[in-house]
Image (cartoon, rainbow, N blue to C red; front, side, top):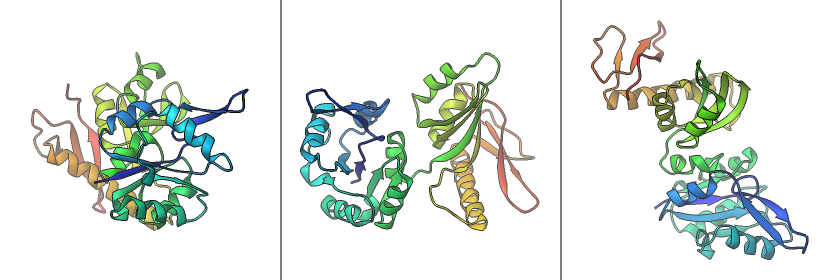
Length: 259
């Protein structure tokens, strides 16, 4: 069974020192809903409280009552090597790839991967990481009659997180295939550009990663009967057409929406 570990600052909550010297953790948007949706999935903490471990532990219990109750899954310390992540895996009592680390810092996620853990940059993608589903980069275009408020509302209901608002008509985002489907059903145009990878790759390796992610997306569409290859007759369920370039690379073109 998966164990999902979370960093605290800038991932689960923002710390706020109080006038009396105590500490309050303010849960970030969508975090409580994500934690509740994880249900019985085991949840833990990997975070650096500095010299205020007792205060952070109290604030964590107050901000997230009943959600991080297994002391064996709470690990305090610096995250400047794989060491703390190795300890977390050992404490979880299972395989490293059954453990997920969710944190906003790319370097820390890199150390977690060195320890064999899966990673996610945002709590919204915790379940996707646990299920080994890819997170993708995407461009979301807004058409006439759509606005950023309606897009935000749609994204809040699925596995999608805005990365950059380029303009009132274009948002760069991280999404899963589930998020793509939900947003497209809501009427938004989602252009998937490849995996939202943290690793620094050379051009050849990055090209291969993007190819595999695209093929996974196409495979999912075919499995649901929602795509046909170019030249084949669409069915009533067909939403995408798969095109093959001269070099054999596959791409997808939106045909219509299923409602």
